[in-house]
Length: 302
Image 1 (spheres, rainbow, N blue to C red):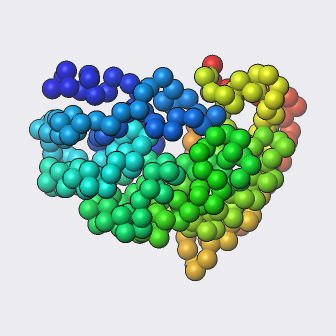
Image 2 (cartoon, helix red, strand yellow):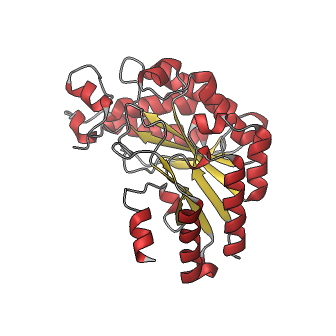
């Protein structure tokens, strides 16, 4: 069994912070798109769909060591939802049979993977046990999506999120502050707020742009072609987004900015805590404005 795990987890595995105590079941390796200019998570990792045998051995090993202790399972890597529906249904059935106390199965979800599935497909997956998806939309802005090579336009990016929420699957939507640089900040903020109002996510997370090594966006920055936002400007961008979120039908959305990339940690529920969040953002803008110097390399990974 040790050899099986060494072979299966021979490349880095990424998961959301909230899945820290979940059983990570690898069903794919890498990212099928793998072209986003801001990301280096799976660079150098050829995309691969694991075989039924590889997946079954992981499940059997986890069940052998503690089937009653597994309550949450996260399907990795970045394109688990890209598997055909029937394959996913088979995996979900095996998980239900193997872990009697299983409460939730979740996964990352790329926009193209979502759009390849109909609303009925997603509803069947939900009924089979896929209850939660993480979707890095990053921005609702057409220009920025094209610039960072996300692979979808603004309409498709928004439709992907809405298709998930319409199916009843809970959605954690991720946006990246500063992704459009100084020049596109306001456009990025307004378009992202509009997309959020349409999608109506269960959770909303704000990350701050980090310039990662081996990413094209870092190369652009090094050449002087990308002008990143200062901490104060990042909070001004977030304020514009929060100010323009107006979820319909009394919907509530849990908001967090507690990622390691964030300069300021915020938490609340939209729309209930909108006024308080804006007040806290205003205070942070005031305090961050006192910084006399700021080096963009502070948010760079080498």
